[in-house]
Image (tube, rainbow, N blue to C red; front, side, top):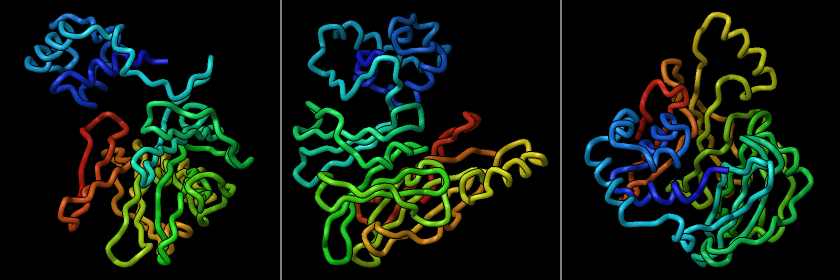
Length: 291
């Protein structure tokens, strides 16, 4: 398990954000080594002069071993990878629900709860049996249907994309059921309420041909016979009943030169514009943004 101290440490360095942290991990192998590195090696890893100066200033001011009050362990299991958490904050501003796979990118869905803003966490909560069959990273969202009833929607991707829902703020859940005759990777990566009516939502995800249809794997193999790079497609889908059912996905963009995936949606302060951030999976280009 990565040492959380160094994640905390770099989070306190002005000018070192997620992209630079990723570059440091790629260069040094881990953040422990990066934290102890000399200026020349940090420059080789991609840090500019000011970021290096800020890192050394931060290192001189804090002792990460003594800052245990900043560390919260949500879960740990000997010999088991636990990661890819998705959370939802409920309306009281304190209750957080979290889901993540028991494995790297796939596996049984683990479900936990915090009632104090993440300072402490429950044990693993009971889930429906079908959650053990999840093939992807689960995601969880709050929705409100046209009648004003609140729901929690949990998704599990690949083919077919499946969802579960709760009508009592996560106390009880349905099993996973197909969302339609389609699938994708990290369904749904992002969701936002729309201004077109109560209970209207748009969600985004991506696929590389393999999981959109039942015969996607065969289509993918045929496609790669004539193409060196996979075709990544960003999809949108709509719900008009508070997230309980979803339309057939529609492509927004498809590209081979960049592996654009795992979208995140941010709405502008005036509510009129949506910005979608896209991760570039092949590491051959920067992340991208569309509006």
